[in-house]
Length: 302
Image (cartoon, rainbow, N blue to C red; front, top):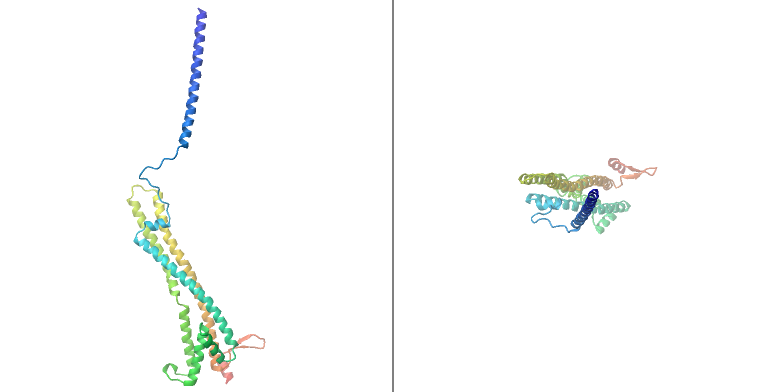
């Protein structure tokens, strides 16, 4: 009896061990199958996005211009034209200033090294009056010779020779001042108005961006920051146009002031030399240049 019970218990133990081993093997195979399935999903090619869904274009300046209306595009075109005009004036006037300075220095060196006014006139007739100092000297010498030879034939020639030469010199200086200041008004206008044009473009772009956001279903930070950031580019473009124009305008104004001061000093020396026959700049005993008063020079000559 007891032997039968022991045999039954032993049989049940063997069956339990077999079931446990079978369960363990099944769980391992299931885990291995799951790992294989995960690797298959990972290595599988990415599926294309569903039809009708497109990636949003990255925000940028070209995107802003493409999405803007006729007003925004017109303001952009105006700023581009302003920039081209300002850079054209800057480059042209810089080249002209360099040439003008070199020619003026060369003429002044030849003028004060000349032995007589006739030699100066011959040099001007040969090379031409292609800069303000030569232009001023040519007109002043011609006015002195004309008034001495023919006298006052017209109303504008009335008065003494010195008064007529003074009027001629003043007229030439006014003409040269107008030539030097040519284009500066345009630079000043561009420098003062282009920031406001860019600001108006920004306001217009923000207005349309907010209208579009208000008509959309959902509002997120991306839908707000993108259009507003694009609209701010117009303000930056306006400043990029204005800053070079303002800097160039200030530089040219200062250059004109220095150049005209030298021209005025040369006119003073030239007038004294034409009316008294001697230069205003004379050297004292120490070898330094001493400027003489025209009145004193004239009285000394008499």
